[in-house]
Amino acid sequence: MMNWMLTSEFVRKTQLEADQIAARQIQQTLQPGKERLEELPGYQLETFYKPFREVGGDYFDVIELPGKRTLFAVADVSGKGMPAALLAANIQALVRSISNLEADPIEMARQINKHLCRYTPSDRFATAVFIVLNRETGELTSVNAGHNAPIVFGSGSVKELEATGVPLGLFPDATYEDRKAVLDPGAALLIFTDGFTDSISGENAEERLREALADTSGETILTLKSLVDPRFNEDDVTILLVKRDANAAFQSRRG
Image (cartoon, rainbow, N blue to C red; front, top):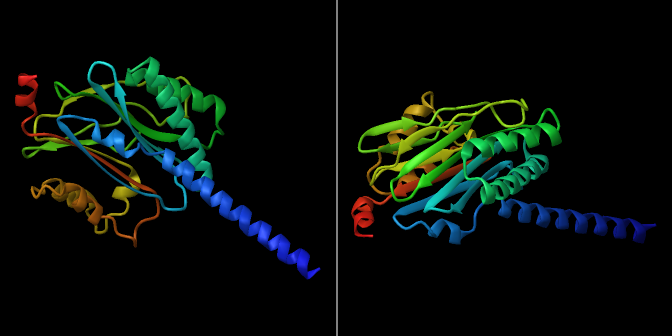
């Protein structure tokens, strides 16, 4: 009897370890590899990701598109843990598949929304933002599906890319619009999930964030990371920072 109990406990622990390894592998696929973050001449990409549990429901990606364009995709799935991670992995697969055929962020949001409405439980949804960057001109084309507004900032100006539609997976016939902005030389684009802003302590988290964006030390990502207070952190945290080189316009003319 004792041997059977020991064997059963060993099997249980082995299975738990295998599940944890599988969970970590799933989580690793939800962020782009380091090589993708280094393939943007004229731009610098910095990221920070901190899951609340072993796995989380935040997803972000950086995808090369034809015509010297790049897609930045960030999604935040409702819920936590493995169910959220599996849906995030599903969204990742949809984004990569659709981007191979259709680079229009409006169409991407529309197709993913219809898929989630059809094939996922009614209590599951995701906020998301899809931004296409023209690397030569710095033009940004953004579709925001109920997500925290990405921020374009630099030279004292701040522009928020507000929501242009509802979260994905709520209404099958939902429509989406895009918005245009420009990432000027020396400016930056900040995309994040609500786990980040919800982890900022103090009564005025928005003011503390704006102060961090005004940092001229060149260590913006470190300043942003320092705002995450473990006492208030109850969700996955994702930060994607895209900086355009200050001499990008000169390099473009030379090319």
